[in-house]
Length: 351
Image (spheres, rainbow, N blue to C red):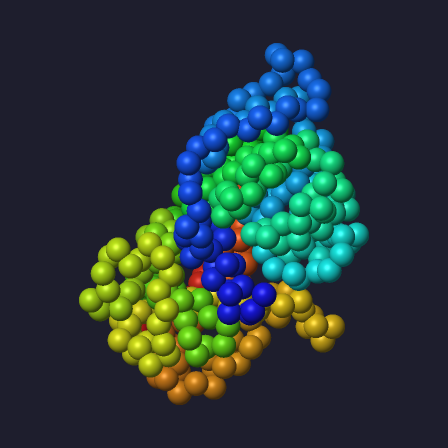
């Protein structure tokens, strides 16, 4: 697939709606898939985006399409038998997950079958897994019937982020644990809000941009991504182009480098970097692979360096994968840790 088509796909993960469900009908249907075997008393009817599906017993061979669903499975103490990432960062099955699956791999004790891409899974590979549960994002709704013939399948709304944790918890017989995780995450955000209070008071205006090369940008908002909604919850005021219609904020809006001076009211800028090919042997970390090109281009660009936030040294870089791909409890912790390490690292002074 062409690189430019991968970028909107990946920016559409989790709660950002670039894919817009790809125009797929959301008409509810009911899976006629029968669980492998279990007593009727141990069955749950799970409501999801495509209708209702019966899941029985304790699923043992779970196929997970996308890291935003994988993090919920791992947070609930279960393991994947098959996995599909957003992009082809790895070829072949995951025989060394810690090195092959960003941020989550060190939590995986299995060797998941690689079942393709999250938005383009391989039915053949999924059949090889012989799953008893399939967790899929909503942009695979057109494949719901095919997937349901293999195993009970839940289609989950990528825009709901942490809400999916409750649904997955029910499917995995981890309802109470899911509730506990949601409560703990809420407390973590409240604690972070208190930590950021002084920064918000002194530098409230924040511009959020996603870019690969510091030439073109996607404007992140409080409604189109977890990247923006969390910062909004922390109290920051997100900056947008003057005259931008509020309705445009529900989807990522492209802005050019030349328009950035129009948003120079931003006290700080966060740049979410992405590079959706496999890291080279010369790259030390996944994070460096995502950010190095962007950092270098931003530092060398005269327009970027003319901005108030650049001159005040309040420009911060975070891999887009963290907040776009991991909107659940694990990603929230990673994202907050990154924000705290960067935005709270130096004494905040009035300009």
